[in-house]
Image (cartoon, rainbow, N blue to C red; front, side, top):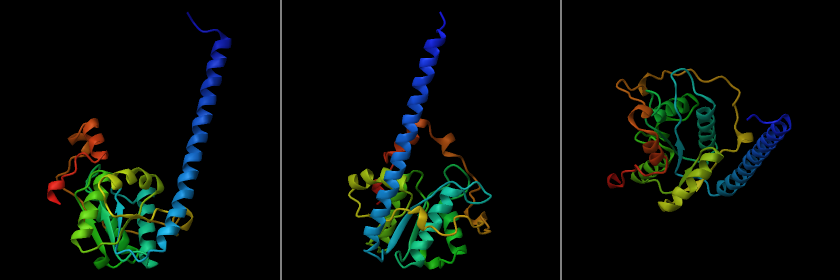
Length: 226
């Protein structure tokens, strides 16, 4: 039995109302995170200089960086040039594409004027929790003790509980969008071949959904290699 026109109209109204509420909540959450991140950055900026900042990677498809990688690289370069960070650790393996994410980000940072001796890559991580965990271990091995995570507000918020759980002594220097310069400028021309992996299999082919979810939650971390 079909619905009456009146019932269909009510259902449509409920759906539209629900969508409006969802959009409003999403906008409110975004605004809240943005404001909170700006305050957190201003507070932690006073503790400069940091010996190293950790910057999680993002997939590179072989042509040029997308907006997420661009945002993270530009912010890290800004922190370095302003003396807030002495060194940068980019993190990320070849996960979804045959390019090692951390190496690509390092190449871009060098193009933007950061000396190679101040750039380090962590090349095991395949998930954001692994980005921060393995990079923290690398930073300690390099003798860096004053460390901060520098990424977008959403990823920062998602990783905080993991950082607390693992008792990692890390501060936060989240991206403040209106402070990033050159977001509209063309991407630097780079040679991505040094970051290319010949024998590559995407994580989607190597791992099922639930295994990837475990990785996102930090369940695949090998603590024995610390």
